Image: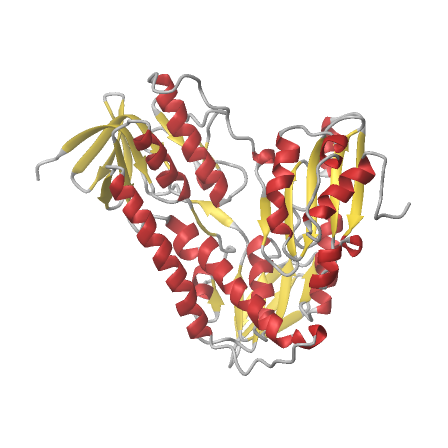
Length: 468
C-alpha cells in the first residue's frame, strides 16, 4: 500500500472544542491546516456533553416552572415527561449547531481528515498517521479530549450501570436512580432527573458535594437538594454493586446499601491519550495527561497539547481558549501576528455548574488565596436582599475574596441563573478590580447583577442593602 504524505503548517489531532478552535483561528491567520477526527467535529462537548446535557436541564427547568407555577399564581400541571421527546429536542439543538460548525470549518479552507490518527515522529518531523496516510507539519497539536472514568471492578453495561453518555441516550425515565459522584456531572444529572420526577440518591466519597467549590456553596447546594428531596450521602464510597431482580444495589464502605432502578457513574473524566502513539513517540505523560509548559509545548519539539489532556480544569471553554492561544502563538512565531499571546491561566477561567440552584465561580478560592497572600478578606452577600432573586424565588449568595486593601481575586456564587453573572465576575478578577472600582458601576434594576454591585459596595465600606 502506497503511503500518501501531505505537509501542512499545522496538523491537529482531534476536532473537539480545543481542536476546532485552533483550526479556525490558525486558518484565519493564514496557516495551512489539517484537522483530523475519527468521530464528529465538535467532540464530546457538542455531541455527548455540554450542549445535550444543558438542553435536558432546560427541559427540566420547564417542568419545574409548570409544576411550581401556583406559587406565582399560574396554576398548571405536568401531565407527563416524555424522555424520548426531550432527547429529540436535545438532538435537534445539537444538529443545528453541528451543521453551522461544519459549514464554518469548510468555509475556512481547512483540510478535514476522517479517521483514527496516531502521533508519529519521523526524522524529528512530527506528524499524524491515519491508516496508510501521513499528515505532517511544522507544528502538531494534540486535542484528543477525555472519556468518562469508571471505578475499578465496576462494569458499566449501559443498561443498569450507565456512563453520562449512556444517560443521554435514555428514552424512558427510571423510577429511581443512584448517582455515584457528587461533582459537576453528578449534581447536574441529579437536578435534571429530580425535576422529571425521579427519586435520586447522590453518593460522594468526599465529605461534601461539588468539592472543588467553596465549602459554603457545598452546604447551600446540599440544603437546596434536601428541599427538593434529593438524597445525598457524602463521605461514603462504593464498596460493591450488585444487580437485583429489577435494578441495582450499591453497598457502601460503612456497610449501608442503596437500591434503585439504575446507577449512573459520574466520577469524572480521564484524558484520552491511550493507543494514539503518544507514549511510543516519546511524549512525556503524567498519569495519562500530556506534560506541557505554560505555552502548552510538550516534551517533543513542534508538538503541543490543549484541552482535557492537559492537567487542570476539564471545561470546553478552557480547551477553546487553549486552541486559540496555540494558533496565535504559532502565528506570532511565524511573524503573522505582531505580539505573542498571553498564556491561559486556570484560575482566570469561569466555572459553572448548571444544577438547580446554579453555581458559578472564577478566580481563587478563599483557601487558595490565604495560601498565596498574607492578608485576605471575604464578604458574602445574601440574595435575599436582591429584588430579582426574590421575584425568581431563589436563595443563595455572592461571596467575594480579596487581598486586604487590594483587588478582588475570587468570586463565588450560588442561586438561580447566577451562571449569567460569571462574565462580569471574570472581568472583575481578571482585571484586578478593587471593590471600589465595581462599586462605582451602575447595575440595572431589577437584575441579579445588582447582587455583584451590592457585594462590592459592602466590601468597599459602603453597604446599602445588607445588614451589619
